[in-house]
Image (cartoon, rainbow, N blue to C red; front, side):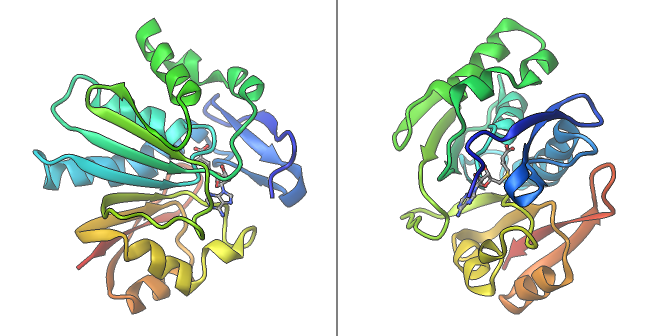
Length: 227
Ligand SMILES: C[S@@+](CC[C@H](N)C(=O)[O-])C[C@H]1O[C@@H](n2cnc3c(N)ncnc32)[C@H](O)[C@@H]1O
């Protein structure tokens, strides 16, 4: 699936993303990788779940760990706070460490401690739990979503697969059912995708579907809540 070496490109907010020539697709919005991740996953997802479960640890699943940008912003948002996150990131195609070194996310960080946290996200081993901070345990699973069989349920899912037009096998109703069945009652899934068929599938599966304002450059995004 991935190019042997996707290319780094600069998005409109100055942050990097990766471009995969083989499927003509970027890892994030061209209108700003950082702002998209913050808007879709942190503001519409993490903040919402924290507001409704302020005292409970949050099991979080990310489909497509990629550059670790969503994990980084999640970590920064819980740094020195009273919330605990168990962050499970699925990634069958880990990126080359040399490529990761060249990503400019560290330029957006405020201090060396945050830079070290970003580096630890990537240097930590796969397939075992690693405490990146006391309240942030990272499990990077080198596996496809299709093969993943977890024994736990999640309060929050970041569904950050490539777009349905580029990777349709991750957006079938069966796969969406597999993913949403992993949510606890009241748990939520957030994604940048607001396609009609996707929203209809979520509704058919019994989820409450909210169409929210999208990040810059995109009209809408979706938050789905499991009853
Ligand atoms: C749109 S990118 C998002 C990456 C990431 N969230 C980030 O911020 O960099 C999609 C990611 O899904 C991964 N992916 C591809 N096929 C997958 C599969 N079958 N199961 C899980 N992840 C997959 C890709 O390798 C890529 O890292």
